[in-house]
Image (tube, rainbow, N blue to C red; front, side, top):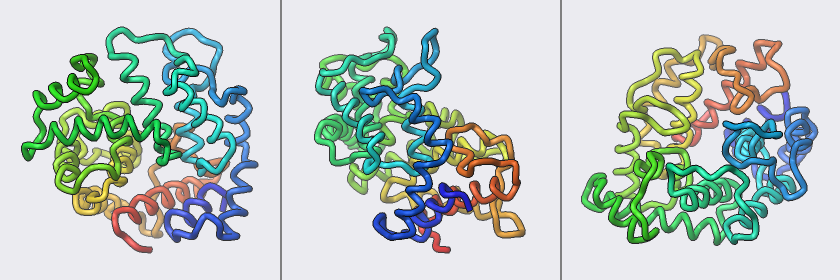
Length: 310
């Protein structure tokens, strides 16, 4: 077994502690893989990878800082790794005003609010103790709790408290509608049980899914399990699995996964899901078994969060 799927098995499924000899040795192997080395060759001295969020215009970079972070996280790197610490320090420097946000300013959004949201979200994924990121998380917690304070989502309340906190009305679709990658990642584990249940119900039934992740309602299962759509759907469920009440709210998705296990006991989402971000985990998919193993450990890790034991 390659080191990354081995790490998934050890950490997320068997739940071995980080200082366990087997986990430590596997992590050392991960840091020596071509996947990790190829990304870290692109890291700059300040910890970044050039642009932070967008490669949509002409530039000299082949990857953004966000793309690098997402891939490195999938490969098993965390805040204990120096390369991740450097990126976190870089992002905290931006929140402190010591670093300039490298991307071209977008005019359709509250750009300063949005870039702080992006940076705080990525920081908290790796370093939840960051006081800087937590300050921004608490602002969004206040917004969402007030918006849902009347036993359901109220857009007027959302806009009212947003303006009270940021001194400007929300503009740009990604800030007028909170159901997208950044707020949902940022708020995992921070909301009260009542509000969290309301938020999960709202997000699961949201007609356009989770922006940046999956563009259809999560309460409607993908047409095909072995598809890019199926993998993106899985990414949306993985985000919501970080919420305390996800076991009850996402049981339908867990059933879908259990219904798609192969006769040999493995899951296989097919070659179409290879995107060099979430998949592959193994060094190569030339051997079909590696693909099945990667799909299986990812799905088992998710099901473990949702209360299954293996």
